[in-house]
Amino acid sequence: AQSVTQPDIHITVSEGASLELRCNYSYGATPYLFWYVQSPGQGLQLLLKYFSGDTLVQGIKGFEAEFKRSQSSFNLRKPSVHWSDAAEYFCAVGSAGGTSYGKLTFGQGTILTVHP
Amino acid sequence: ETGVTQTPRHLVMGMTNKKSLKCEQHLGHNAMYWYKQSAKKPLELMFVYSLEERVENNSVPSRFSPECPNSSHLFLHLHTLQPEDSALYLCASSQVRGWGEQFFGPGTRLTVL
Image (cartoon, each protein chain N blue to C red):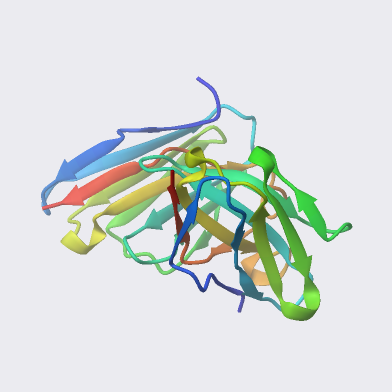
């Protein structure tokens, strides 16, 4: 069964500092990986996705993530955080076959607080 | 309207009430999903519809009854709910099932008294 672990429940950074949110997944084949962001009272917005090819993917709002198969990781990074980045971030793995075809499995989420 | 819309945004209901949540997608997608988001728990997939056919039901209690009359609309009918069913219910859609990103609506915040 596929699973996603986000080890950090809550991270606090200062505005302008760099950011890395961790994501580890468990999946038997090549995964489809996603990062979503959720602002309070809102739905989830896709930041970026990895399906295949270049393991460093660029997303919206200046975010990037790197797929590392050997570490089963898909960490999200941003070189300089803005106050508007404060939100909850979800990593997800998608299945492309079997009985779970089309299913997204989400991590617990990481809440990001940004200090001015 | 654009994207995925959900109504109502907030709903308070008693355990004996019957209510429905509505989701509409304006993206021309063929797959739609219901998720439950509870505090301190990961998002839980409840139902998947592909081309109006229910293709997945993740052991959801029968007090939740989905309906997909066409590829643009998805309903979640609620009856005799329990307080533990209080959560944010999110609807999502994707172009085809199992491929590409899912687009989420803003959710319905449900409180069961």
